[in-house]
Structures are given as structure tokens and as C-alpha cells.
Length: 103
Figure 1 (cartoon, rainbow, N blue to C red):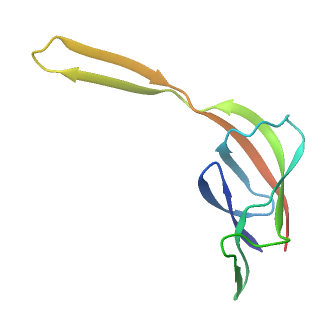
Figure 2 (figure 1 turned 60 degrees about the horizontal axis):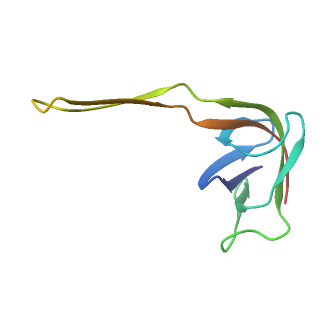
């Protein structure tokens, strides 16, 4: 059984036992959270699609780590104008392990 969930403005296809990195969720490491914005649930040939979400369907996940992605360097330059700007960015993430899908 798989599900398509929405969290952090993005959509993820998840299966029980899978680990995913999503946008940061304010939760402690080791706690279980419930993701209730389920867009679709499928098993084999049967598929249920929400409009936009499925009622009484949820995905439970366990928070494994809170971390930061590797640095992305931003460099801007205008030739012959003596303009250079350097900047870095590290995005926060939460790693989740999908425990189960309640359909």
C-alpha cells in the first residue's frame, strides 16, 4: 500500500518502512507524528483519490533526525562593473520514517 501526502508545500509518494526528508517540522526526535493531508491511497489496481484530501485517512511517521542540507553557494557577478556578491544557504530538514498508512 502506498500513499501520496502533502507536507511543506511538496508532495511525496510514501510506503510503510520508507525514510524521507521533508521540510522542517517542529517535533522532537523520536516522537510519532500524524500526517493527515493525504491526497491519494493506492494498493495494487485500486486507487482512492481525494478532492483534495481523503477524509479519515492518515499516515503516521516517526521523526528520526532534524538536520541541515549541504551548503548551496550563491555567487553573483557583473563583468567590468566591479560587482561581486557571495552568499551561502543551508536548508533545514526533518527525516521521517513512515510507520503506517491508515486508509
